[in-house]
Length: 99
Image (cartoon, rainbow, N blue to C red; front, side, top):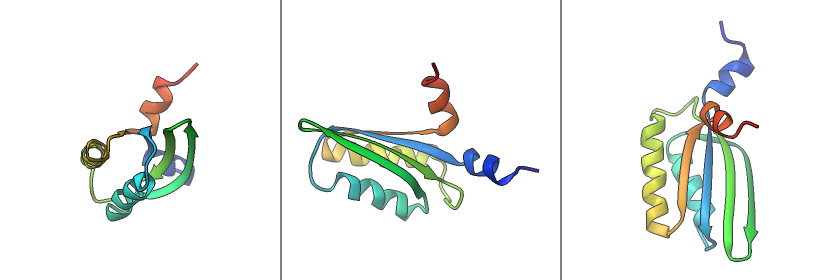
């Protein structure tokens, strides 16, 4: 049986957004997550000159879509608004960014 911390981490994804800052980027990402019942747990953003760098952690526990479908929706939004949006499972993100 999974304890609550393990269960929470099992369904977490990391969403990254990089690109020129403009109105509506965060709203667009949040709308896609909300529409798919993906809960934002934490979010951090910064503006580096005219570029937005955002990382958010989200929980897909209640979502009815899979990660691939979510990635496709986010990629479509990114292409439309001119930024790069990616989503990956927290385990994959942690593995790729280990020291």
